Amino acid sequence: MAQDPTDGSTPELFSGGEKKDASPEVSSLKKVVSGIAQIGGGEGLGEFRLNEFFKKAFEKHTEDEVEASLIVGTSTTTPAISEVDLSYPQPWLFFRLATASIILFYGFVFAYNQFNNANLLPGLIITGSFAVPISTVFLFFELNIRRNVPLWQVMRLIFFGGILSLFFALILFENTDFLSDSMGASVAGVVEEPAKLAALVVLMRGKRNFPYILNGLLLGAAVGCGFAAFESAGYALRYGFEFFGVANVDAMVDVIQLRGLLSPFAHIVWTAVAGAALWRVMRGRKFDFSFCKVKEFYAPFLSVVVCHAVWNSDFQLPFMGKYIALGLVAWILALSLVNLGLRQVADEKSGKDIFPSSAEV
Image (cartoon, rainbow, N blue to C red; front, side):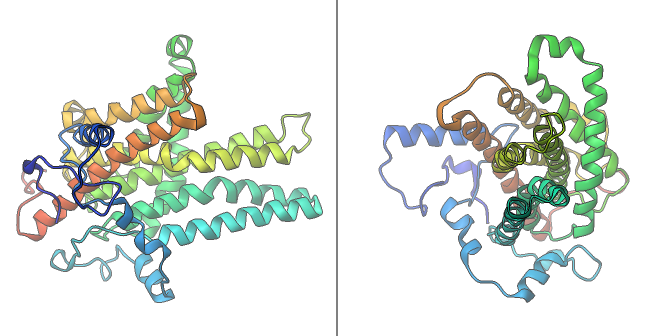
């Protein structure tokens, strides 16, 4: 299923996988990608191919296919391990959700511009702040080939994980003034990433039926989505009413659009990486702080902390280059964990013991 890490090869990310004479620039890029994908003992990107990954997003799908994709994770809809499809996932549902939610957001914008009715503003803020983040979570939902996490569990983490992680972050901000003085806005990486991961651990305490790396990836993405969406709604409100309480809808729409555009490359994928890395070392066991000392966890986690800190720094590149570069780093980390997650499920299907025995748990 996934590429053998011992053969020393790397996948062709931007082609169909055909071997061609690579230019020095392409070879250097592949080395960089390979290096990032091996952080924390990663094994590369496996069978990931960019031109194949989104292939099904542009195909037609029936309502039955939509329902089958959503109704998973129950006692009757979680497949037996022998029935799990090990082919590399090709998510498509997220694209349909993103399209619908973006249309809904601009529907509110159009309606407000036509009627200038303030009752439309809450809908504009809510749909705009949650549209792209929730759609991105569904991409991770589709990547979970084990199909053992129900939708209600994801939604619970989006909403309760969002408020709890914000609460934890605000507590940490109040007690880290010394860091704010020296790091400025970059302190958010040091504060918010542990806050989101702590919220995930607290909310999943005692829930041992989601032990897979791909589960941690999805559950972490859900918490990151809640944090990002609630934060975006707050920024939209502040920007929209900063002029003596008079609605500045243009400013509100601008901040929603920018944060929506960047959201798949920030909080959601950062917390997805953190969750997957922690789930990788926990292997279904109770959380223990000793897990934080394991390189397989702390190397990817510190990587997203650094990404977040640089994201908030004053350093800039033309054409939003800083955000694009940092987003690519985060997604390479996420896809390397997807590869590990796919391997884990494949190992279980082949009969290997991938989780500790009950005596060790």
